Image 1 (tube, one colour):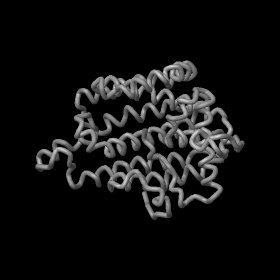
Image 2 (cartoon, one colour):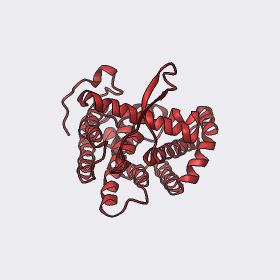
Image 3 (cartoon, helix red, strand yellow):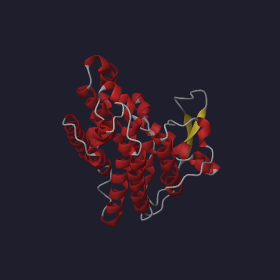
Image 4 (cartoon, one colour):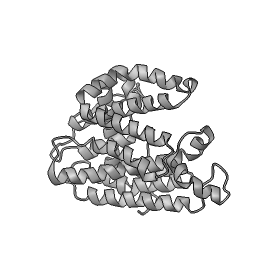
Length: 304
């Protein structure tokens, strides 16, 4: 699921790259410790980024070495868990659960068999996460339900759809955060969620057209494409540039909010993700070159 919010690794210093990997592995360990082995398979980059944003300004790093399920024969460095890891592990489980339920409700039975099996496996983890994070679970269920209704009605506003997912991310802000920090974090997470939804919709455009699923990008541009005699799975020539503009707009707004947050141990790596990783992902997806190959993590000059 997703995977667009990642650093441009070639622009990280060696110790920063090692720290990022340790954070990624740290969330994996938190998922396994709190929700069982199966939960470790839902790890994604977006929630690692959220860990960095929610990390306490005075919290340090506790790097340990432990066995990795992906490389069971050797130990890897990982960040020991703290409150940010625990929260984001729960958010991961809840988001995955409601995404599975949404897919099961939308697709034909035969296509949902893998999703139904995954739901059975994650049921216990979801119940535990929902009990620990009832506010986030309630918001995720509410917004995903509203998004499903919007899609069923064939909503044609790109923001009308993206707003639902963006609202879910803003619910990840801890209740303990208040005042200016909360306002800034709300802006940052809202536009991060909006950016993710729009770029994911573009990335899935052709697959959704072939399968007949709703796609917000298609809904936004379908009338224009029809009027200009484009094929069913083609977008108008200027659609990519218009999407680039709106994605850049959200990237700029979340960047401005990021600059107002207090610094923590992850600030430089998170800055790499925002200022270099996200523009690179944007250009790669819009250019039809996603996902990136390993060699694509070299230094690449991109700008917002």
